[in-house]
Length: 187
Image (tube, rainbow, N blue to C red; front, top):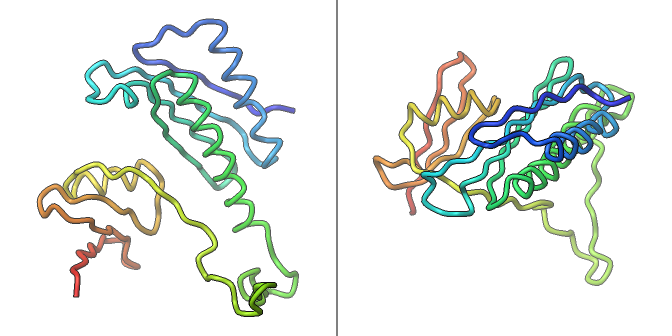
């Protein structure tokens, strides 16, 4: 069974080839996570983008019971941007599954059950950083960061380049629902 796929375009003509390609690839997300109900794909072209690699944008939003996952990628070609977004969505789905479906059955989380990993060559503990991620920061102010944080569905924090201070900041949601801002300084 494949999930429902909605394809929208802006400033791009939706050809049968593009529609078939997107539906074929995005229609199999429920293969990775069966609780996915629908996927929404938006392909757009921005003529005014400064860089040619930023002109075509692909956004994929996946909805399921109790969750929403979203990714956005840019490339020179619309289908290339879609392929990048598709790969990113697969990683997000795997990460979501890991956080929400792993467990021990005794009430403890999978993180509690993790044992230290020893390096086979040296016999020492391996590095604590298991994954590194790179992403592009666009200059914005605090208000725009709050809007982006909400749009992306980031519940805990959002990293952005503050255009007013010319520094990287971290916006986070406080327990009472308000927002906090971390402005790091070198010591």
